[in-house]
Length: 410
Image (tube, rainbow, N blue to C red; front, side, top):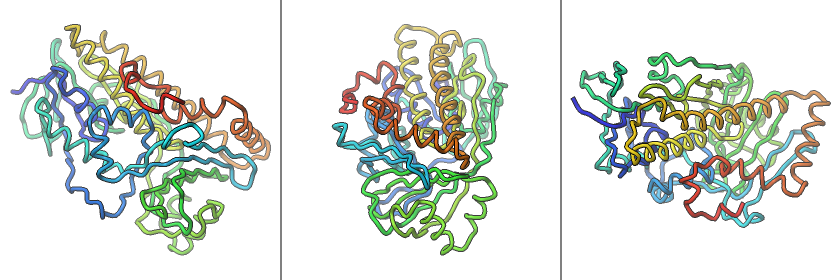
């Protein structure tokens, strides 16, 4: 039986980031992951469909973890502008990095690229043990430690178990933590698109009647990853429709902003659900990332919210360990839970309100949102605050604020 201080269930982006962040803390760390990466990234690989819009706060965390330079050497797509508009109307808002003294506003990065960089980093750390191709079979919660049985019958003990095992978290269910959830009644259609005109490093999003369409710029100036949020039936229709017709509908819906669009990948649809765990912590347990919350991909904040869970938990566990306190006591995990539940709730409510406001073509609602976008775009002092939120700078834990970065100008 092997003993650890922290056992992390889930070797995705969030779980791996936590393991890397606890390196050199004096804690013994283990990761349990059933599906390790199966391939190595190559620069000439085709872009994969699942990408994330990594904001400045997450960039700062990844830099601290020592993986940002690895990502830059692999494949990242910085964007210098953002543009949001309401189709067939005058409402729009734009953000520009140069106008705010910045080199970029964020980066579009494929999820598998982020995960591979983090996996390689975690594997190289002497105080991190990887249990690959196995899963949790059972966890018994003792007074002073948790007793873990793996699917291959190996047994571990840990002072703290961390659930980073995704939206359908086995650990959350096993701990009987209630979950509030709701169906957005939309599916996200994702694909890679070639555009006639260059995206010029601008992330764009258009609201149209029954959906939301985002074009996320990739490293090739004529390639974009799209996320098209649509009612389930409409998403399925567009997933299976003839390619030429899909290209025409996509181009028109996007107001021909980048000229003719050409599908160059498969199309995948993902059901969109909102989730919010009743508790983010319990005795000898902490939840983070999708195991604790999932939100609409409207503003691309899902993985950034998870990375800030990681940053907060790193700070708390380091503080508790330095004070020789029991890192698995729910009493001591309360500060992490309060702070991250608040941030997740604010994000969930904000995204839901924004989605409802831009849903449909009711003329009064359309006028209200168009006036709102126009005022936000033109009133002094409003856009810098909106930009701070988009870049995640309002949500940094204290210890990460001290990391120097040019984004402090915003």
